[in-house]
Length: 494
View 1: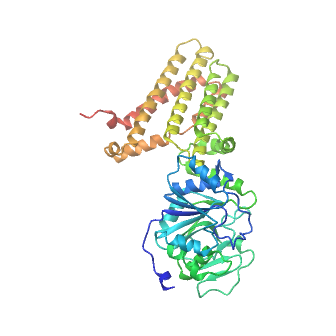
View 2: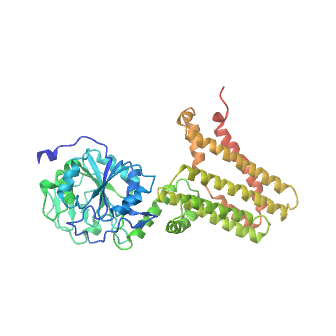
View 3: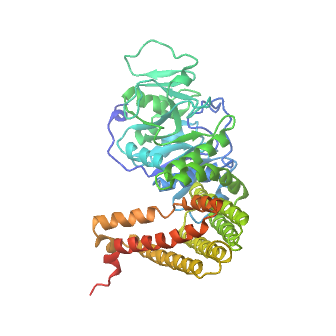
């Protein structure tokens, strides 16, 4: 036992053990009272197994050991057909490595360098949480994630709770399970009440354990007790548990009634939180509220982000065509369809982030599709103003339309130049800090789709010709502003 109390050297946590058919803290194979969903259950357009692997990979894990049962061949097939897998995956059949056999963890502990992450396949969580666990776990302590019940459902593992002193960043001294608790003396002689799970922090089914604790279960082995419970209890006795709150690094247990639906809702909510800083007001309070409904539909249809981008472009082009006749009624319809195009345009990025399908080609396609819609839209409004309105049959609408289209092309060229600069660190280092900040500001606000509401307002008031005039002036102001920000990089050096 003396060796178990020594402080381990600091090691990066780069290995994760993924349990596909049982929970991390399931008691003697009996479970925690909630049915464990299959790793092939789909949540947010991916199976729980795929989501776990990609989240771990995105969080910096380079080795994933999968303890799997009868579904092994199906899971292998999922990864074999996916070229995005970069982490090294090792398959450990549960018939040879039973999760409730302490020898399994003793064997794995011998191969772990420092510490490893242990996760259940029925929890969805953010890559940032994986990164946080890796950082905290490199210090030689056990690290657990805690949350609370939410909306009558468990926001964490329903099998384990912590005492109130287990606040984020502190060392907790008490771990409470359904059937018993272990405490570091001295402890209050009060027995946990039946409703403690509703009041006390719940431990999520993902944690980091040092190798010395992972392999200790053989020494502490009690018949029918989950070895990982014993390891966590020993950490409590040593006062070596670090906790991470679930407020800033979300997670959601998929077990229980409507678990997959609640998990998908949590995933969508996390996306909107991430994008809130870059979105305009209309995106934040209108488009993103409605895009979630469409995103769920696209996920069920299995559409790729690039397919959704093309759908958004086609809808936008249909909207632009409705402005050509110059009819007030068709202009209203066109503006409404344009707003639908803006909502769908939110969905491609949401689906890409939900399914870890982001790609450079997808980003390029999105930018070009948006600009094609804008160019055709301004051309359609110009044709409508030429055919019907105060300036009909004069050349002014056509001149304004041509000017706006040219400004859009110029801005697209400047934006591509700025993106190329950002992708070349050597060129970026030659710019001042202010110039780099200007580039980030400019590229960060390209996603603003608020102008679609302005089109709808002007169409309703019958003043699209004035909108065209303002767009012609504003577009060139934007181009000149970008050119001024990029002036040093645009002038060839001698």
